[in-house]
Length: 298
Length: 318
Image (cartoon, rainbow over all chains, first blue to last red; front, side, top):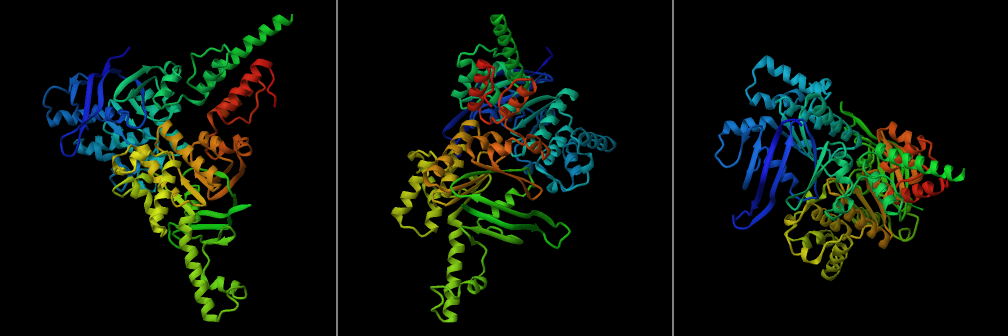
């Protein structure tokens, strides 16, 4: 397996009340390793701490305690220089839920240039990065358009291009498809997949959509500030009861396989993340039993 | 019987400007009373514009919006022309009749906001009161109801939406996202609207929060017999809760019928960029693989019994 990119040990974070008195723990000791080039989905109900976790990873929030290492740099237990924080944010980009809150300029290409420009990228290179980023999200034709006239999916892709132009190693998507319609969602998910496969960018996708989580290499389930489950989509979706207990549901097709098994049909339940997998399971079970039936008939 | 009827409705944004856009293009559509109707279509298909026409937030550029056969955008002069020979107006002097009709039209116009409750996208951003109770009470208060009645309405709405009584005295801003959403929904339900219109009521919620919201809406609809319209992108939720479905694209109604009729046109749905429920896709795949399972399956429960029956007997029972 490739190198570890993000390493956390007993990472904790508490929110403090406005008057500075009461503390509300949001994250209670998360220890996890995320490898370079991995595609990880993060699941959990509202208020489970998954967004807090993401915000710690690029120091929008500072951990209350625990250890956080990104790349080879340890980011906890000492004062960080502004330079280091900037470097980190360049490496770990974030795309949020509402596309309208993330676009700052009045022309698409200027918006994409905003990040690298602030990093002091000099001119010929800036142009290349912007063009490259827009091409990567398939928005080159819109370079001179006004962002507010784009569809939700297009806006979100521009926001992603703005991150790509800073050449990050890792991108965190915090419910980035929640406000999009099905075609907008598909556009963004395809873009995420492409960034991961072709550009080797490490991806963390925080989502409520189980079908989206099924596309990842690995799923983390966070509940009440703790890491409850960690495994491949197949492993996670196999544990329907635990997921239900924390307010989550497996994809419809996986639910079907679970119900069939529960009702006494001895169908294989190990590969259930996608529609195709489930269809395959049912088909091979059918082939097996009808063969048996024929043998008996003979 | 239709609760709402759109009669050749068109709506044009920025008419006469370079940005002119026809959001609704000659739409005629009847919404059945006492049913849950789902409206699907992707961004820009005109569905949100249509929602806004239903309670007079916007008026159609052309055509009529009828609620119980009454044109909600009636102007007093038109009504006068139509009604002056009818009781109770025919016995009044011309000016008295005019005045009475004007008052009646104004009253109906005002009532419209209470009769057709609109729950916008992300309604929790519209919470503003000090306590949950006061926030839910805002609508009924504006209806001019008595204190007692207001209280009864708030408690009823809280019950429909599953808001526990100890939350009523809290600040709405201290609640979780899912709870806030339910408070916002309760604020509209407290007006006991005959028609409840919801734009993406479950967007951004986790599965449990989503179920809570849909159960609340369904509970209200069944108990009061009101008419509900839901705009959503989630075909799974639509299939589970709605009686009828309307599919919109490019400002027009492309399909209208019960869930079975609409979901059976899989290829049409795909061609306008919409999804069908995952479980329905699975059934289509199984059929492709030569298994004789029924195609008209939209929920997990239905799929379980259909697939089970097929595996045990080798027959789909279509």
